[in-house]
Amino acid sequence: MDRDLLVNKDLLHELKKIISDGKNQVAQAINVGLTATYWNIGKRINQEILNNKRAGYGKEIITSVSQVLINEYGNGFSDKNLRHMIKFSEVFPNLQIVLTLSRQLSWSHFTSIIYLKTELERDFYAEMCRVEKWSVRRLRKKIDSMLFERTTISKKPEELAKLELSELREEDKMSPDLIFKDQYVLDFLDLKDTYAERDLEKAILKEIENFLVELGIGFTFVARQKRMVIDNIDHYLDLLFYHRKLKRLVAIDLKIGKFKAMYKGQMELYLRYLEKYDIEEGEDKPIGLILCAEGNQEQVELLQLDKANIKVAEYITKQIPKELLAKKLHQFTEKAKLLIENRSK
Image 1 (cartoon, one colour):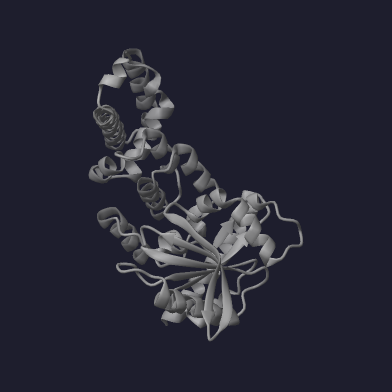
Image 2 (cartoon, rainbow, N blue to C red; image 1 turned 90 degrees about the vertical axis):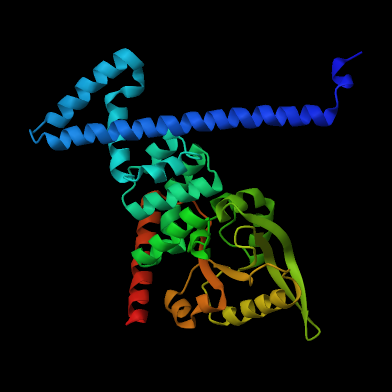
């Protein structure tokens, strides 16, 4: 008789879970210890370099230390890796934050983040990586697609953006500005040069997995062409999602042209209907996302859509060079910041 048949299946399942959890805890402890070691090495070498003002000393000490450590501990302490460690301790000066992040982020995650230009950008990717549990490959793809520059928080005043990231770090509180973007890259849809809104919807549903990846972790698909009967007239919302962290329904309306002011009234109608008939106890008010081929920033600003829980974003259906995307995002960001500054005067 097969011995497995004599053992209670629930017992086996529980024992396997204990073993798996134990292995994960050991791996996590090793990762935390290794990351702390690299941080401390980087800090100590950096102190030595700063204490000796002689020109060229930094290069000499790194090369000398590297040779000794490689002979004793292996190739993990090459010149290049020691420079990573020094940079790591410089841009993440708080060891406690490093230890918290290292429960989810590996050394490869950190080396992908430490050379980003600004503290805000580094904090954004580190915290989103921790919360959404990105692999190294996913993180690098998010960086290459300029996720930070496309996310609403990058357009806000720096102090407000830092406050939202601090709340995410300390309270796991996720704000809509950390989730919603101003541009969505939908180059995987394989649309022809001319298409209708229904074609866009069908392409998204066909590639729903990729679309969810672009939206971000936490989104769950609820319905397409959500029917709403208002005053005996049928209205149809293109796509309806739910976001677990925000605990909100997210209504998405697809438009193939430029944003128009009249879209606000249409989305407000959808949101009020969802608020009255569809939200459940404990959920916050729904959020609307109007996806357009092109935005009209001044109209969006004048309409004060944020007060109505409505976001407007552009979508990009063709793969474009990163340099062109960067230029487009820079222009968008500068205009958005100018509008914010004028509003605050």
